[in-house]
Length: 248
Image (cartoon, rainbow, N blue to C red):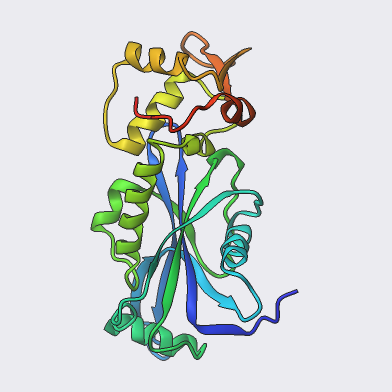
């Protein structure tokens, strides 16, 4: 049981990615501040999913808590990818205004630890008290107004994700238990910002013994039903030899 006494200068920020079978998305939280007297909107932008840690809470536990509050899910892929402690990361005018308005007594200098989170969209029901939480295509982030240094944190997370999907099977965390090869190809294309030849892609997948075909096909689709596959971590762990390239 946590003490619920927050550490004023240490936080965690989770860059949460999801895939909707067409595009890669990131989960962002709406941040809005209105003038109490006039109702004028003083701040209207977006943040990553994050908050300060408790005094008796480890960093990993804090990140898992935040994800649980947002999605209701446990056992989500969650991994530290970088820390951010620039002297001016909370020094912006609107960010200082926000910190003053929420009256939490946070420090003038805050160090945050970035976490990469991968979620199967089909299992998520978003909820956060008093705040709007939405999925946005990663392609939109460049034009969005974001709090603190959260845009820089996002791009650092994208860089880490693209590196990891080339050498580890973490991309499967973004898919449901059963998926088609077309869905898998669209995922890798979305992750790496590339297009792959369908035949070459399937040849590569055929060499992945841990991508297992099922005697199960799509139902209720307008096109010819595609076969389903699943990713077996057990088979992956047993068959991998040294480093494996997941570059298609």
